[in-house]
Structure formats: structure tokens, C-alpha cells
Image (cartoon, rainbow over all chains, first blue to last red):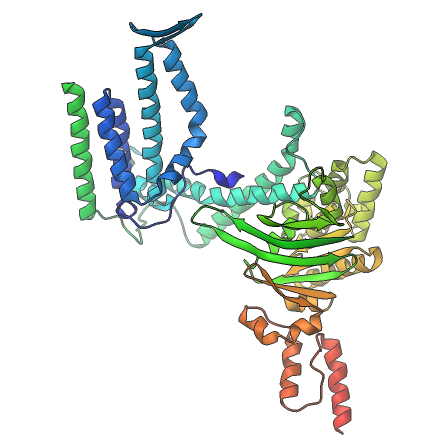
Length: 267
Length: 284
């Protein structure tokens, strides 16, 4: 049941997008997010839709797999759509009934909001789908390296991030195992009122907590045994290097961003 | 009274690129009172198989009958099944959570909805069965040694008085002495309480001494199923799937190849000793 979450998952395949430098992809995601807030017309949304479609095509990730990730934010989506639909004031009223007023502006606003959210989620999940967690933290560390100058512990933060990401699947497995072990001892997680259910979690949380602490101490010991002492003077086995495809990627991004800005100021 | 598997298949992650067929049309019967060794390499499907036996995993295809009734049929109580089929997971000590040993053992019987008196009696009995006397009752389970923790965890399942006890690699990570202690205790439970035992292991050596029957799993299929002597005769095929017969089997076969008069169905060191001595006497 816990394994069904697709947000933040990596999809193993080979494509141009998978091979891109993680810094390029991080920048690309940022550009795409900014562009979504620039779009304010049907043409603007059409351009970003085409851009997104092109990237999905390039990533070789099945569309169905990406769409499945939307399920998790369905409720958020519904709430924001209904707020926009019912609470937008406007001139052209379509439907008016008791306290409900639906205006043409409201419909437009709701559709835009839905499209914007869906695109945002699809765009950013594309990055995690095509980038392994390790590449991602590498990209962040190198990309944000300049922040060291203002005494931000970039290396430590990214090390913590990669360890946390590394441990998610392990802890998911562990939770699954402990849950099953307690179910084999007759534990019941599905019935009872809220308080009973919360109490039923104790036999899972205590062993999970104990094992996390145990794993953390083991890992700390193993890192110390290999003389890890932070980011000072630490070199990389695979340093990140930009290739031709990254230059092309930045060019595509620049053209797209330029187009979006132009569309906003012209229309 | 038996568990019967009918063409059970199980697929992990169906519909994703990581799809794995963990069980492939497995059919077998586990009759009452048997001591079974379930052997297979890592990833052969043995852990998946045993989780089907108490309904923790639902088979993708096929059916499982407990005492002649399908466990997937309407109105079948999974809770009751889990109290009858006790499952001890790998590294069971990781499931301990209470503040003291005795309370932790009470968790299982308490979930069955028994009264206070019965719960305490069962907990005491289970702890006695695994050889933990009452001086440990108030100890924190996290202060015990590895072997003791494991025995407490096994007692936690025994306190539910299961008719079938399944143990997944109960000796993993224990030293030879701890291993023998646990296995001897399980064997005694089988003998004295008459419960059915399924012992999962990847080591033939461990199980050969104790079990009545061996089931060998490979790639989600039960490839061999029979008494140990019969299964070990296929030691060459067993090697091909990455398992080895007990070392003594090899010695016996080598002796036979050299023309030494010895039977080929010897599985334990004691038997081999007798047979070799007898062979020497005959030769003279």
C-alpha cells in the first residue's frame, strides 16, 4: 500500500533528459515554474503545454506513469478549482442560484488554476523521474556552491538530504515488515475510533524509531571508519561537467522563457 | 486440519516496469504435525510463500484452503487464521516495543480478546517454552542479548497458541551456539506440543537434522518436495540452483565413487559415522 506513491520516484530508462546534467534540470524546473506564473492567456498556456509535451516525449517516461502521480494532489486540485469557480466575481454571470454565482471569469480562472497546478506538478515530477536522488543532491551542492561564501553549510545540507533520501525506501520496507509482524500477532490497524487507531500505531512507531536510531549510529560509525569529516578538501569521483546537450538545454530554456515573457507583455 | 495451496501465484508490482513473479503456480499441502523445512536461495519466493499462509499477502492467482475452507471466502476471519498460524519473521527482535518483556509477550493474546488471567498464564507458559525464567519478566526487551531478544520475540508468537508455527530464518545472525539453542527449542516444541512447524532456511545443514520433509524453492516454484534423504540425492541439481546438500552427503558420495560399500541416503554426521564403521568391518 505504501509502495504506490509515485511522487518523487525515479523512473529507470535511458533518454536525453536522463543524461542531462542535474544542474541543467534544476534550472529547467525553476524556469518552468516561473513560466507558469507568467502565463495569463490561452496562447501562453498552449505554448507551455507544447513545451511540456515535448519534454515528456524526450524523457521516455510513459505519460500514464506521470499522470498517476497527480492522484496524490487531487483533493488540493479540487479545492482550488471550486474556490475559483464559485468565488470569482465577474460581469458575465452564467448561473445564479441561491448563494451560488458562477461567472464566465470564474470558469476561466478555475480552468487556468487547474492547468497551472497540473503542469507544475507534472513538470517538477519529471525532474525527479529522470534524476536519481544522488544526482539531484550532487546538482544542488555544486549549483549552490557559491553560498559557501556566505557560510551556508552547503555540503552538510546536501549530505543530509542524500542520506535522508537514501533511507526512505529502507524505512518504507521496514515499516511494511513491522506492520506485518504485528499483524501476525493479531494487531488491527483498520478498525476502531480515532484514539484506538492512534494507539494501534505505538507497536509500529516504537520499533521503527528504535531501528532508525540503530541505523543512524551504524551509518555514522561506518562513515567515521572511512575518515569522513565533512566537505573540506573533499573531491568527487564523478565531478559534474556540462556537455553539449546541456548548452542546448539552456538555449531551449532561454528561448522558451523569452517567448513566455514576450507573450505576457504583448497580449 | 491442514493448509492447502492450490496453484498460488503472486506478482510484485504488477503493471510497473519492476514487475516480479515471486510465486509461480505453487501447489502443496501442509498436513498436521509435520516438521517441514522450506529451503531456497535469497529471492526464491520462500518469504513470500509463508506470508500467504496467514493471509498477510493475498495471492494474485490461486486459492489457499485452511481446514478445507478458502481463506479468501466471505466471512473468513483473518484474525482467527493469524492466531492459528503463527508467523515469526526474520529478525523478529525488531518487532519488540513494550517497556518490559512480559507486557510485550501479552500483546498477542491481548489482541485475541482473552481475559487478563488467561493472558498472563499464556505469557508465562510461552516464556517457559523458550527457556526465559521469571527473572527476565520486568527487564526491558532492549537490554537483553541478541539471542534472548529473539527467544522473547518467538515467545510473543507462541503466546497465541498457534497450531502451525512458521519461522523465517530464525537463526540468521546468531552464533553457532545460539543457533543450536533456538533450533533445539523449536524441535522440542514440535515434539512435546505436537504443533506443525515450517522452518524457512537457506542452509540444508541446519534443517537436515530436524525436519520430516523438505520443500526446495527456486524462482517461485517448488522444485523438490520430499523426505530429506530423497531430496539430498539430487545434490547435483541442488548445486545448480545455488544450494548445497549437507557436507556429509558429499563425503558419502565420494566414498561410493571409490567403491566403498555405503548407502547413498545418509544425511547426518551420526548416520555417516555408523555406516562408515560398518563398511570398514564388512571390508575386513
